[in-house]
Image (cartoon, rainbow, N blue to C red; front, side, top):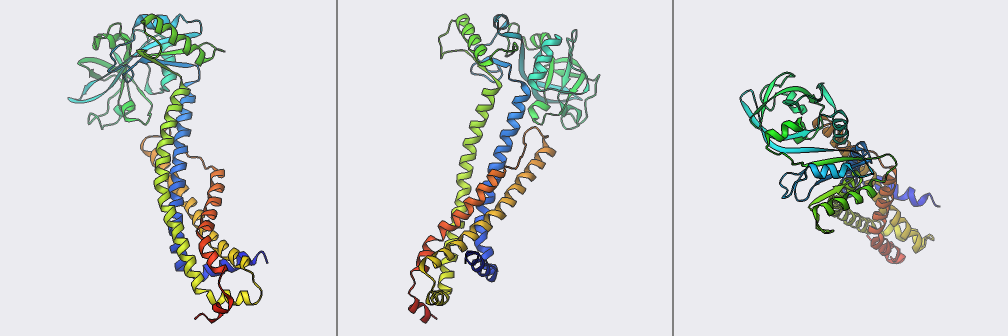
Length: 403
């Protein structure tokens, strides 16, 4: 008896192939949109988490308030701030960076990009490289004594920016000052990063006339120290030194975990909005199932009368129609999951080809797959409640007379 609840609906679905496919269409469009959006959102979260995990949990990032990496801020950090941060008992090492946006000239062509000034001290340079996840693809990184030397982003090894690739040993003008190229960074995947330039901090101060100005400070906490606790101590020290009250700081301090949480909150909000829009398609699919089941009940009125005449109860008819509508939902959900995951994988492949693997890491969430299948079945069942109730209440005598 139990298998008949699935055998009969499956037979009816196969018998009306075109109608069945049209009914499934609305469901799997909605499900595929939702699955792809959720999977892509999780992929972005995974990639962001991996990026921030690579930074290490022992880093603090201090920057002026009101600017991006110190650019455009009303008040800049300075050497005294760096010394104060370095003197904190929980800090192992701290170093400052400068950020500017200016022209780069090579092969008589000009483009604009970010120019970073970093310390050439081996330990401080290593801290910056670890925090920025830099890797050298060709040549070498800056070292002591490299005042007017530069390491360029990966894009400079292509012929897109200057119609000619830059070579190690080439000369390039940065903000009007000539620099010798000593190396190139590995591809990061972000155009601003791949088109950037890294110069010694000493040269940065001269070129941008930014003496005693630090746009960004990276600090590493000592082993065993709680980064959040150290951040609170550093914040208090800077607040006292700057003479500002709590909540009115002219600087900000963040940890990699805080950066990741901020990104994830933004991603979740965007994802919720997009899923809400995609759910409209699923609602349309549910209405399509309801319409199909009303038509089915109408066509099978006489058959329902025969079933009741030979002993079928109202509950049997109700369950038969509910299972059939649920199977429509389940089938649409299964197809939607396959299409949704396939689309997400294609987007991941496109990201890898276009910008590299660092920005999207798709992983199939089997719990999400199972939950979506169950949800699809429930959507189908809910859409079939009204037609099922109507079918169960048909009068067997009137149904047998129906033509």
